[in-house]
Length: 305
Length: 269
Image (tube, rainbow over all chains, first blue to last red; front, side, top):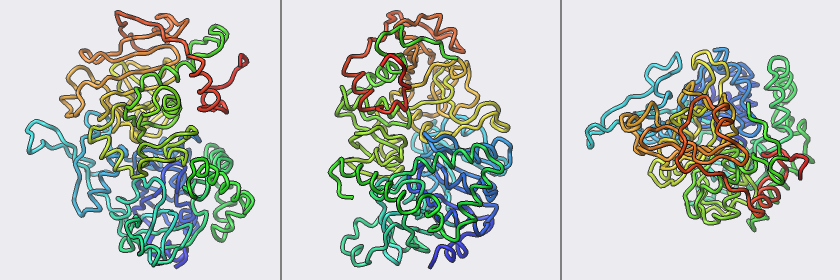
């Protein structure tokens, strides 16, 4: 299945979409571009850190609501489209902490209605809620320790999650390299998951060493081979983040309006596929620099990339 | 606004550098440190390269006990993943290490810190119609709930130290003594330390209020009061922050921040 078909099949208007990656690492950018080209709208985006993948969808006016622990690109600044629209009230943000969000996915992946946590207590995260949230949390008394408050958070089961990973076989047995952030819990909680990957490997390779499988195929709806699919964010052991392009995107996002539109027109709508986009951001020459930068990082520690 | 203390008043270093070095000193060799992005990452990298080579860094995206060679610019930076004991998940780090109670120091920044050590990283102004929407909690709420010691590093500006935060993202002593217990938090009397380019302040477990424990060289209490939206107490044994050693400065400038990303390089070096 190609990315076009996968997005057409599993992402729909009004869907709750789980976003993989974190900050400048392994965001599912190729899939996000395709969602924008297909104009899937009224989306609710969920995850822990919501980063450039979220900001691009917000900039394309396809988002109604976000639920997460944070929105930003760390050293590269705010997620400016998101910030602007939260400030103006055009989209709503439901705030949790990162542990709060992953606890919700944990409930979802285990088929439970909610998960307790001892975070959030006493903070304003429990005072405020987004306008369309019906019930954000409950506080109960620990049945085994009367008087002790415990927060319950509702399970979160996204309609579809999108992640970009290092390796998968063609049936969707996935190996994630480096940090896995909230992805294992989120994917197992999701009704469908679209995976893009740097490499498709043989199933027998996975099955000869199955304890390395991060997510088995039963959770995966579509696998698409898309090298560089996280650009401009990084993929551990494959390529570093593209600071130059991130800064360029941030300039457009900060300016807003016409500049966001121009960015989308040039890089997303003006590209048939992610391959076209990769040509526009510098093609092979630029990508090899990012690959080399990652190899240097791995080699400096005697790692085998 | 920050009190302008020029580099020349301190000879060979400036207070932004000493702020990082002083913050690093609060990490003991062997501490399990839950570290956030930015200056906390810089100071932790410095500590690891100087007096605390055995500190165990845990990073929310999943790395547990990595060897940090170059300062990572993000919790998802590949530079935070080398030779880790394990590259795990956010749930493992925030759940199975932090909430489980295994973190000695949580090390974060924040947009606003109030007199009780509450931290705001969510919004300036009203939550429903914000003046500026900030990133939000990230792991900061979790860290402030569960770490026994909380270390905060920020550059000292009056707007960063209001009497009361616009929004409490991460709990300090909330609205006073006993409030953490009433809220149901597990860590009742955390030690909250703020290191700025003017001062080191620590919360008093009895009152929950900040107390000045150390002043940066050349800084007096009036400068602190003038740049702080509340009146912190003063420790009976008020000290001056020790000047940096040559090794600290060299390591910071040449290894931790060689490109001057975190501390702008001035004329004096």
